[in-house]
Length: 430
Image 1: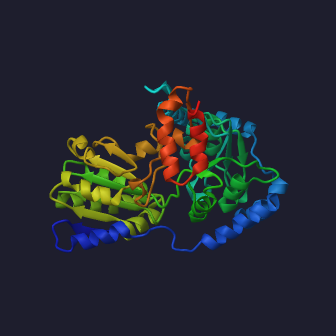
Image 2: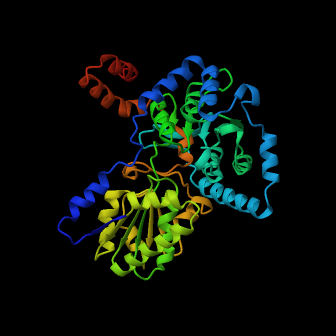
Image 3: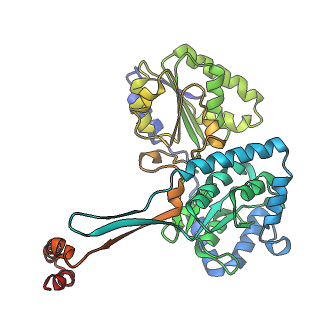
């Protein structure tokens, strides 16, 4: 059963600390296995990728083909039921519009000394997005990863997706077509991350890799960081709902289960100031679990990682929220902005009783690729900026170098770098 805490109890601080510091990532030490896979791919290229794909996915790349062509993606999109295509297009349009507003502006100005300063933004040349297969085969993730890359101006967008036994979700292909993916490769796992990072004879390397995956994929991204950029190392999904007794308990129960159904390691937490409402939500969860197709997964998640916290001060719960730094935060209370103003650490926040987290997973616009495992303390959700880099520039004139150069010479000499000092000083002597 879920843990139930009362903020007024004497042992609350210690119990809450246990929740904050509990690790829900896979407990297997996959680092060594992933390192071996990456080394194999780096050394043996396509041969290693093909062998690993046959081993883990039961799919023969040489016999059935490495790539999925764009014609198959177009056919998948055209073959969708009209209402489903309309929904996918609605999501793509809103995601594209939201991320277009994130594009940064170049700067170019001259300061009071006459030095010209600025910065120019540009997209990376190539980006790779990883799309899971199996349980987590989500077209929404294709849109959330691919569209920001294209908005940023990435000219070569590569997608890898495992196709166990040759199977693939047509919706994933349709989403790839809508998002403008340029290359689709039928590979997954750590070997796909290795191929994207190091390149093979068939697959050219990329500059940035984004997208969700299992523990092996997450570890592979961690290990190739530095060779390429990555979005983040993500763990199991999580949601924190702050709700008062004015809510419909069935709504809040569904919100909590929306993350629990992702994975047995997902976590759903409720903070409320109403004990009777907490009871009602818990009862509603029990009822809904019996009707969910994903009930076994959601039940394990809720029973092993679910938490209910009672407090007499919902506005004061900001301190608890910041300690947890949740991936998703719902504020289903009167005047949610009053609490939102106090919150410093959360991946994405959903304001009010009519804003379930699930709407953000699909059609709201902001990205659903978000930091987990308390990483919202220092990182943000996926954005256009993850596919761009900034180049600063400056230009001194003969007169402006006279204004700032002496200070540079003094600092260079103080640091014991005479060549630095000389390169500036020689221009001052004129």
